Structures are given as C-alpha cells and as structure tokens.
Image (tube, rainbow, N blue to C red; front, side, top):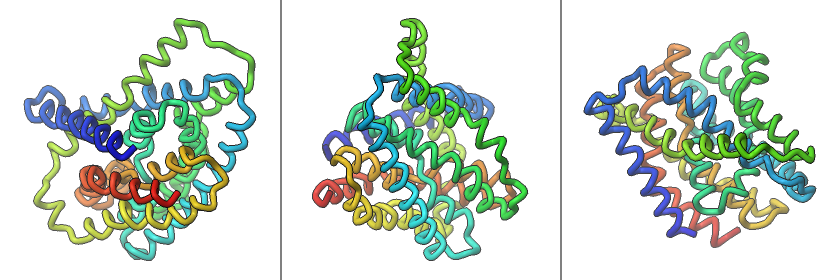
Amino acid sequence: MVLILIKQILVMLAMMSIGVVLYKIKAVDETGVAQLSNLALYVATPCVVLRALAIPFDAEKISTGVVVMLFFLVIFFVSIVVGRFGCGKVDRIGTFAVVFSNSGFVGIPLIEGILGSEYVFYVTMTMVVGTITFWTYGVYLMSGDKGEVSVKKILTNPNLIAVVVGMVLFFAPIELPYVVAQVINGMANMNTGLGMVILGPTLGASNIGLMVSDTRLYKAILLRLIAVPLVSIPILMLMPAEFEVRMVMMIIAAAPAASATSMLALKYGGDYSYGTGLAIGTTIVSMITMPLVLALAMAIL
C-alpha cells in the first residue's frame, strides 16, 4: 500500500507541476484559476460524491458510515485542541490549517487510488460533518465574528447537496439512466487533475521567500502533518471498523491543510501570504510525511 501511495503522490505532484508551468507561460491566470476552482467545487467534487453514493443499498455501509462520522468528529475536536495549544489563540490561520484538511482535492484521489472508489463512500460521511464545521467553527475562527456564520451557506453547499441527493439514490431503488451516470462519472474523473492544476498556479504566483521566512509556518506544518495524524492513530485503534475504513480516516487526518486556508485569510483580512504558505507548504511536505505516517498507521492499525 505504501508503494501505491508514493506512486499516487508522484502523479499528483506531476499534475501540480503542470499547473505551475501553465501559470508561468501565462496560459492560465488568476481569473482562470478561480474559474477552475468553481468547476472543481460545484461540479467535479459533487460528482465524486454522487458516484460514491449511487450504489445499491447496503445496511452495513450505513452503520459503518455513522461510526465514521462519530470518529471523524472526535478527531476534529482533538485537532482543535492540537491547533489551539500549538499555534496559540492569536494564530487563527495556523489553527484553521491544523484543523481542516484537504480531503477533497488530495484525500479523495489518494483514497480512490490506494483503496478503491468504493471507499469514497466513507469520505462523503466525513463531508457532512466537515461542511457543517467548516461554515460554523471554521468561518468563526478565521473571521472572529459569529455574525459571519451562515446557515444558508451550509445548506446550499454543493457537496452537502450532493450528499443528500446521493443518500436518496442510495436508499431508494433508483438506477440512474445511462447518460446521467456517464456524465457523473466523466465529471468525477476530472476531480484529481483539476485539484492539482489549481494548486500549481497558486504555487507559481506565491512569494516563496516571504513564506519560508515566517517561522509560524513550520510549527503549523508539523502540527498538521505529524501531530494530528499521530494523535489520530490511538483514536482509530478503538474504531469498530475494517482496516480499510480506518485507513480512509488516516488519509484524511494526514492530508495537507485545506486550500481554503489562503482564500478565507484573504476574505477576512488575515495574513494572505501566511495562509497561502500553509496551503502550499503542507501540500509539498505531505508528499514526504504521508507515506511515513501511513506506513506507521498500517503497522499499528
């Protein structure tokens, strides 16, 4: 499994490099990146969710999915403690990066490549919890204002809508028409490439010298990529689920910081360079840490 992981990471790194080249030769600019991000957010990732859920009903999957949600919530609260203790109350951006991982653009492709597309089902279960916590605690953490928390944004999030629609398909004896199923499959297949190409221009446009000179960056990276996965292992040892499901949770726990770290920092007047450094820095360093952390988890779990 470790060898498959390394190969998958190298593939994703190569895709990210394509994004860097496209930005450097000015084939893609900031407007194009924003449009690609919308395509990934509103089309590709929701289609990944729909594809994972549009399967025959399985009572065991549902019971395991509930367990996944509960354990994801436990790891989420532990991550908050790690982030607040490690980064301090002042460093809200660092805490956000420690708590929220990039399960969509990085986690899902790795899980599909290593464990198989059938295990994306369990990622969708974490998305329910993740979407709610992102638009509540996450937004409050970055803005410092409870008034910014929006129930509307939670309910209209495309990934949450995809989960709801997907669950209807899962429970109901409905088989999607061939054309619809093929469209969903084709759009879902774009998710990995889009996610990595989007990160490329962000890296190409960043002031690397300014980012690496920020000492806060290294602490947050270590907390996100080392501390959170390590504290997750003993929690997942208690999880009543098969090995592959526990590894799904470990991949999410070991994934780099959410790409929204930089976007929300900019939106709420925070240190955009620091937020971008966290999103990019954790992504690059995770290419080294994830194989090591997951190899340890496989030996223990």
